[in-house]
Image (cartoon, rainbow, N blue to C red; front, side, top):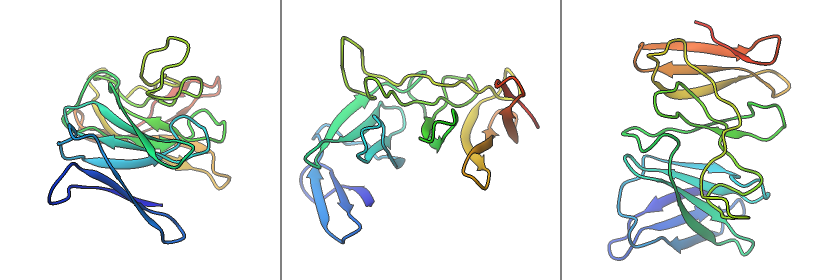
Length: 190
C-alpha cells in the first residue's frame, strides 16, 4: 500500500492511499489537522492484522490512523513518549523476538527506543479504563547519560532476527551500536 497525506486546494487534509490492486481511496481528515507532517509510517499499531499509519508532526501529538474493519481509518491523537519533539522520529524493529515489529521512539532525553505498541489496548484506544498511549516493551539506553537519540535502525540477521540496533546520537555526534548481552539485557557499544 502506498499512502500520503495531502492538502487539497480547498477543504481539510486527506489521507490518500493506493492498494496493491491499483484502487485509490481518499479519506478526509479532521479539519483541525493543519500542521505539516514530517513522516507517515505504516505499522499495525494494535496488532489486529490491519495496516495502520503513524503520522509524526513536529511539536504535536502523534496522529494514529487506525484501520477499522470497514477499511476506513479512525484518527487518534496520542501523546508522544516524553512529550512533543521538534524532530519526531519513529523506526520499526522486532526488538523482543516475537515475530512482530515494534515502534521505536525516543523518550525525553532517555536515549532510545521504546517498543511502543500495545497489543492489549491498542495505541490510542480505550479499553477497560486505560488511557491512550503507547506501552513500553523495551528501553534501550544510549552510550552516555548525555545521549540524545534522534534515530534508530535495526541490524537484521539472515533469518530476520534483530542482532542489534544502530542509534544516532545527536548530542555526542556519533553512531553507536547496541545489542543484547548474554543475560538478555541490552548492552551498549561504540
